[in-house]
Image 1 (cartoon, rainbow, N blue to C red):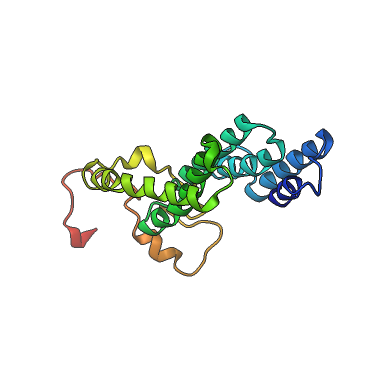
Image 2: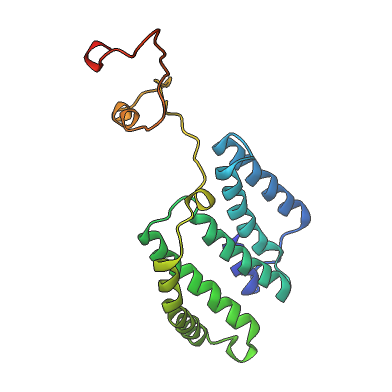
Length: 195
């Protein structure tokens, strides 16, 4: 889709028709279904969002569509934090955020529209100005784990053995804090060495 859009921009190709776009949409949804086994859930939803972002390039005709595409890009970067929340991902995500911010600046300010270097410079200057606030929020804002990270379904057993085993699965099973079983005794509880 990106290559096609670049060719349209260079006036070497035309925008695809409705049938081609519909075929790409059905093919993409089918690919997500085959890869994830469903169209519902965190993984499938994230894959569909990224696919919608890429396919939206073929429908971009005016400034509003470009703005929607840029904001979809920001949302795709944010969705990445559902899967990765480490410092390396945060540093890496500065590149697409800077590029998307530069695209938004170029879209909004017509005097910078053709000057890629100037828009990138302004975007990263704005990000550098926001860095102290980001640092303060990182240091003093409380961590809200249950709201930010969603549980990932796994094929591994938590309190027992799963159908498929791989090296290291037993070690991960032993680290699980989940309750294995409950026991009740008639009378007082026996000593630990008698259990």
